[in-house]
Image 1 (cartoon, helix red, strand yellow):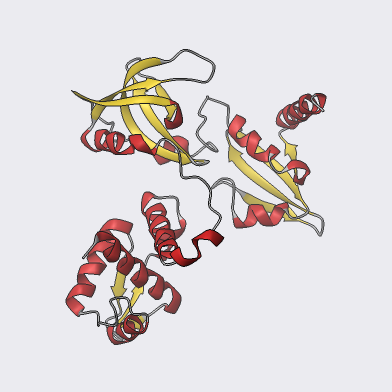
Image 2 (cartoon, one colour):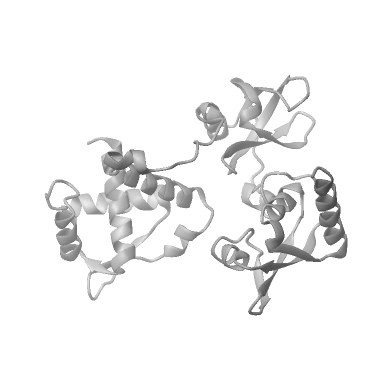
Length: 296
């Protein structure tokens, strides 16, 4: 069986248990046949148990069984809503399956371009897995290119761009955009990854990928019109909290390092966002808007 078909079966099991909450194997089998997952053939218990193990290994999703009812259910559904690689992989494979089944209407599907820089992913992921140093060529905008040997720590996807978080020979942490990487070579030299280093923790105080040492701040925003609903359905940062609302606006707080990435996101909402606190950030936003107005 092709890997894509097996992944489709994993996704079907996960989504079916999410939709119906709890099902015994007979109930699950009935829906399996009705949906013709394997051309109407049943799902043997041995295959289901193998799929359960693979789903846990691949996505971190635990399918438990109630001892009294023998009904199966997802016991840690919260993993599907976090920002882990397992959650991202599940979402990606789910979309892939839906699009594969929708080939007949492909002219009516409007998609964005795939993330750039993915041609280097295999080499970089191999280096991360084996703790080998990378030799990369890099070309910043409006500057001369250069080559550098780095210790690859992590990959991050942001705004349809891949970024490499790496430690340089000068013992500095740097973020490299893969769309500006000109070459990648796996070296024979290895490095030791710090046991206590967490990429998620490294980026946790930031929005996006810019980590320039901007001081932490307690930011309070006022969102107008439809903007509160956008923030509620897709929070900008894990620290986002709604602290008050009226008929006309809602206030949100953030504990974050307000870098240019974060300010750019706020500006993208136009007059739907107003920075209330801190005052120095409010003034900075006013200056950015004033400079923009000069161009008009």
